[in-house]
Amino acid sequence: MRLSKAFQPTLKEVPAEAQIASHRLMLRAGLVRQTSSGIYAWLPAGLRVLRNIEQIIREEQDTIGAQEVLMPTLQSADLWRRSGRYDAYGPEMLRIQDRHGRELLYGPTNEEMITDIFGSSVSSYKQLPKALYHIQWKFRDEVRPRFGVMRGREFLMKDAYSFDADYQGAVNSYRRMMLSYLRIFQRLGVRAVPMVADTGPIGGDLSHEFLVLAPTGESGVFFDAALEEQDWLGRPVDCDNEEDLAAFFSSVTDHYAATDEKHDEAAWAEVPDDRKREGRGIEVGHIFYFGTKYTESMGIEVSGADGTKFSPHMGSYGVGVSRLVGAIIEASHDDAGIIWPDSVAPYKAAILNLRPGDEACDAICEEIYGADPENFMYDDRSERAGVKFNDADLMGHPWQIIVGPRGAKEGKVELKRRADGERFELPVAEALAKIGAA
Ligand code: ATP
Ligand code: MG
Figure 1 (cartoon, helix red, strand yellow):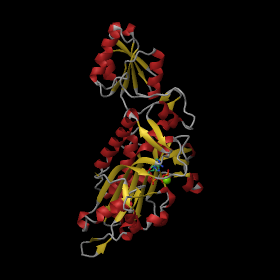
Figure 2: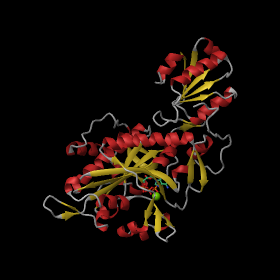
Figure 3: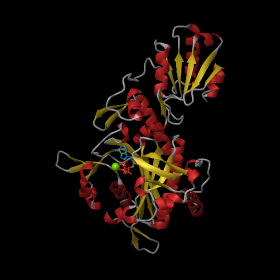
């Protein structure tokens, strides 16, 4: 993309309403604009980040055998009456009427709808297990929308649902999702630690929240450093093998990790002092086993091997896709702007032409840009160098390819790595190879 043609409305002023760094930076970098309280429009660069996150989630959910569907945002109130949640949900639910007076709602989550779809299509234990996910906008009329996309009213969620014949099957599904989530967050370039969470009336240990560490997080966190040192992508786990899944799962849950709500001083005291980590975290995901709560209340049954009917066991698994954009920035920025991890960055690099109109500069910039126009943001504007440097730092591209008249004469450019500011003076081909674009 050529910046002179792009819609990238950066702001110089720090917006007064934004209290935390990610919110300020998302507005200043022109990633989103608020259209009404807690509701945001995604502008081109922000949308590219959102799409990159979605894609990583898709790949990792597909890898564990989950299948993507897309359910609507509007749901019928009657569906929620079947589970008993229509009245129980409270004022966070946005309730709507159509022209015939039929009651609808804007989905805050999809347990009822997926249970209904599943139940009307599956009749035998032979069709289990199944895991389905979708990536769809949700609406929750939060009392206090704040911190930009972090706690919005309309927000993008990946929600998955598993159906199993029995408890052990559901445990296996839960463990596969735990693995998938750890891989997703690692690929996104954030450290998200799984922590025990409330299971409600179900009990047991099958509820975990994933928290990205950041000083502005809403929850206090306590965890064993062993959990941040692991390479989940490099670790082979056979997802069809119960023992393998169990070994993987205990390698996670054997280490202490809890938010302030579930913190247990006695268990914490057992963690060696040099491995104790305390801080704050942002909840970016939640996985949860809830047994037959929805299948039973909604009257969904399938027949078992001996012909007797039973209600399948379910779990649900959420990732806050739009919240993640804020959480990643919260965990990865400096005074000058965003520092995108490579995997989610809207563009791989910015090309900064310090002297547009100079023959050598223009030629080199066009050559580099031509190598990957889809993934480079070419700053071809007739602006001062300082403006270009500031904008590139603010936008957080992993690399800046700086093209000035002196180097250009010798066919050289300066590469700057955004994360640590390190600079390299290199011939064009070597520069492209270094950033993985050749
Ligand atoms: P929270 O405690 O932060 O309100 P929750 O427990 O209501 O979250 P879930 O119902 O588990 O959230 O939803 C799954 C994920 O969706 C959460 O882990 C979070 O990342 C994201 N999420 C929930 N509410 C919001 C919101 N208002 N804005 C943005 N993302 C959200
Ligand atoms: Mg909530």
